[in-house]
Length: 252
Image 1: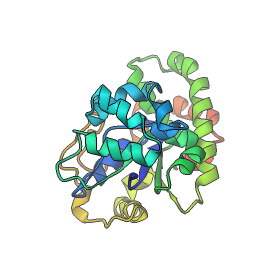
Image 2: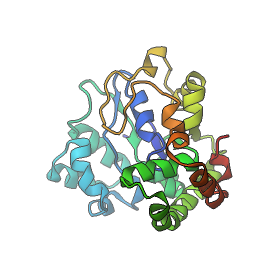
Image 3: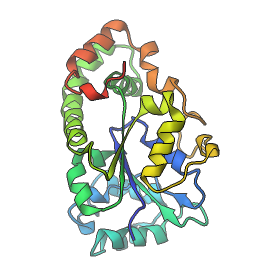
Image 4: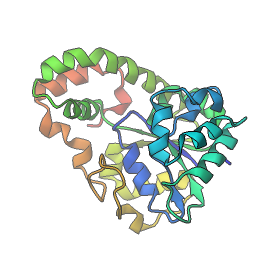
């Protein structure tokens, strides 16, 4: 048994929103994140932090159940045991997916380990930096950015290289958060079709917000463009300069 599809992308680029849209489909659900495909084998996942510890709450399983999943000889067997043990999946769930943003950073290996279709989410680098700045809870953007930018550039550049390598792979669908906000229906129809699901208009209204980092019941432009309100023009220009090599991710 394998997941019907995988969702990945830089953290805070809409992966949870995309997951909640898919959860509107009856009998389709997921835990919060997994991460097993970042490892060479299920056995190696048992000590792979912080993902291993997060599995207990994220999928509603016990330590013994997690150990049993990790004893699996294949990733398919791992997922089958996880699906049967999970207590967070809605009653009646028949199909599931794996949403793990970090998969983008190792997408080539992930694609080798699981043959499910993949959705990659991304957003404008100015919006990425803005999301991280908000979470830092400081008013000193310049001081924060100086400490932040080198590490973020290194990680984002690695993810971007994987994006470029696989953007034309038929197994991969690329979803820009700005496209989801500005051209919602067509983008959702494309996203759903890629994973073999029929889109229905009512799926665009998220009935129940499972996770606190999703604030809206519908896709809105504010989630994609709030950086224009929060960041100064100088800060936006600086980000544009530093992240210029991620050119396909900028939305103007």
